[in-house]
Amino acid sequence: MRLVEIFNEHPASVGETYGEHLVHASGFGFRMVLGGLACILHGLLPFLFVKTGSRQIATLHDRMVVNRTKPMPGILDFVI
Image (cartoon, rainbow, N blue to C red; front, side):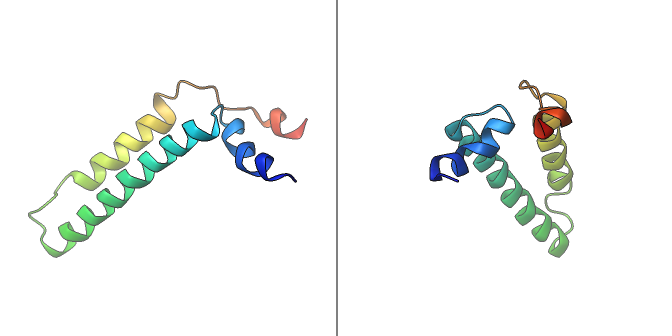
């Protein structure tokens, strides 16, 4: 498999270019890291970041599933 194909195969499968996928995936990762740090601090100091972790999960779920603007490929798109 050519190098270009390796970098473009998955982004294309979710209807994005490599650059679009880089931006979206990085944004998700950054939000997950910050939410994780808030959860760790909340575990140590329960009065801090009381709703931050659950809010981050809800936000990411909405961005990825509920408000998705690009159609997800069907199962047959992978088989054919």
